[in-house]
Image 1 (tube, rainbow, N blue to C red):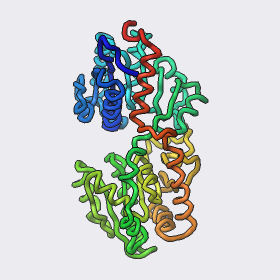
Image 2: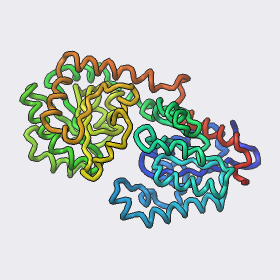
Image 3: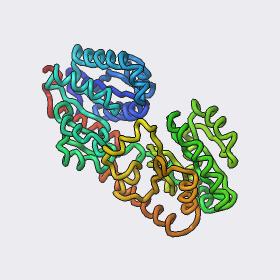
Image 4: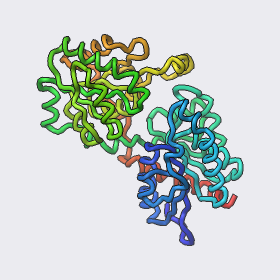
Length: 396
């Protein structure tokens, strides 16, 4: 599809946090390529989207809030930004509204816009976790989402079963980075050499880090007693580096703290095994072929949520594989003893390690797009198709 000759297509994008900003800038680039440049962008985004030409209505930091207490503290500002965003869309109607992740913010914007402009096409990039909890959201989304672009291959079937909006798997952005995740010959040799390299990933949020660091440190001490010497590497981000270094001072097995994406991926490519908090990093490790133990702890206040969470797993690789190939050690079971025992099985040759490696090798086939498309290119095509199927949207 190409843009009309009389004017550019107008696309309003709303991203709510850093991960959405990363998806957003790639989508903008793919849309510009697909239309031959006949497109104009507006909306809310971070540094990456702004570098692609978006003038953000307000700073992304105003709405990039996670956790119950931080959200409550910023609730008045968040509500004001929701209203402001919806009003900006209604005042200058685009050809399509694309909301990207952060459903607590973006879906509220979409509902306001749909009420005021019923004919405006709305695409949602990233599915809420309806497969884990609050499944009723899927059916509710039909009222204000015309096209749902999912990152996980099982999600379209979930939405179809739950009565959700038309949904399409567009591919996870990690499948565009397999070359960065896979070891070369030297790194592959390091995986099998001694002493083994163990990657330790206690999370990227301070609340999770605080809950897991003690158990992870204790697990490394017990692991050393079980398997002998090993090298531990703890990748982190620059804003957490000082805190991580302080927290490992008293560990008997002190990991080497490395900072940045390149250092993290280098560690993955040479690692024998990993101990990781639940999150996207487990999918990175899985695609890199690193056997791992997954761990997670929530607060006592949040623990009762486990009774309403329906997901068969908390780890993305396990959900995609449809089996618990990766051990999950959670809450009261998340102790140094349990973590060390599970990790020891993965550092040694044997059935547990072989079984997990074999399971992880199936991810490529499950996650790759059938025609070899890049996720952003497929997402762009679907956004343009959504516009085409609602040609009068901007004038409604």
